[in-house]
Image 1: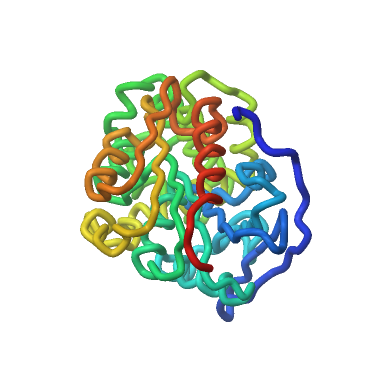
Image 2: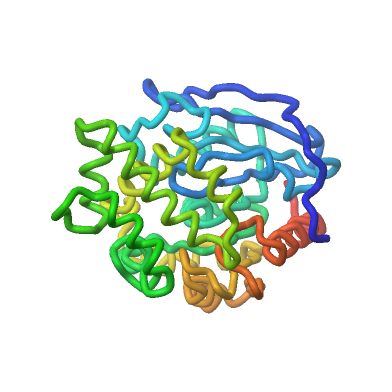
Length: 318
């Protein structure tokens, strides 16, 4: 099955107060009596799209999507205060408890895979299974690869130069420079850099250039939260200890896990998935050939939909 499930609308949506400052947009789709699955979007700061609902059979899944702090339809928009990994993990638990769900499947791609792994390691008893795509392990080397002149630049030097051309003359390229500009007082320059950052990343996401995909992900509001959130998390090393995820894989070794990763992923190189798979010997690693990083690429989409079908067959309580 290479095509998404049909388009669906939420049967329930609401704003959930998770602290005195942040409200999360949460929606439920599909079958209220179906198996619960939570979708964790990428970025940080990416927000959910209507296609994210369509990886799951709507007749068999109770599909929960939400926009993480400060992005998408969550409020306040663009807010970086009290926006750290541990807070996001706690938010996922608050959503689960609010919806009265005992255990659920967890699906996450890119930064969503990071968050899914950290959440599962913190709450393994609440996770029925994991489906992960485009593994990002949150280490300094992973940030450097794509955003500090690392290996990705050698693949797409022309795209990188277009990003550099937007920075002020004499500015040193790197995450800290971009973050300082995007959180500074010059809002016009901040948005210009945010759009350039987002355009650089999204252009690298697909093996074959896809301008409509780039355009959809780099509108002003989307670029603003994607770039600012990413730089905020990255200058803080994703609020994780170095190699935290791989060091704690023993906590999730019994959770059925499927990893789907594009062979030619330039944003998050394939060895991220390989290293995680080696630490989870009972996991299934599916190489999406002729694919890059994006979930919409034909092979990757197919493998992810097949993985969600397989999740339904798991024999477990909850």
